[in-house]
Image 1 (cartoon, rainbow, N blue to C red):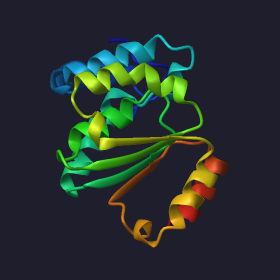
Image 2: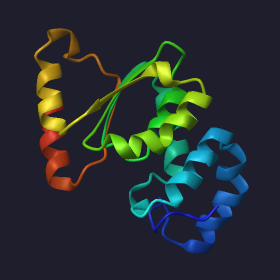
Image 3: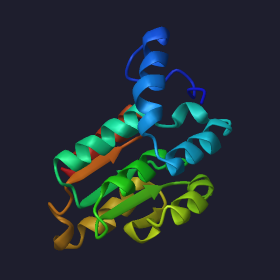
Length: 163
């Protein structure tokens, strides 16, 4: 697998490739690999979560025993897939993105991995979707983990809204 763009936790290419080959790719599920290959072909592949980030995210979710999560900015769903695979069978993800078309690239992989029941995808700009969710008091403090993958300005505004 070829890394998408230059997005990874380490910036040294030789060390990074060694870690990918000896640790990351060995632990990557078939569904994660399949979605990575789909995402790598997309013209905006620089926005894809890297394989090492996906595994780190999965580890964090398992360590905190997360059950209810939120993802803002789904793109082709690589981190969404990592999250869904890490959650227990009754775990839930509210996933939102302005573009359903990119998410639908991941849908066959998500369905094949038998995790579609964990995902509640909501299309639209994040702030109005969040505001609508926050009108319901049961959503206050109900998420174990939130991941916001938006540009800095929008991301900071949304983080303040969620907290």
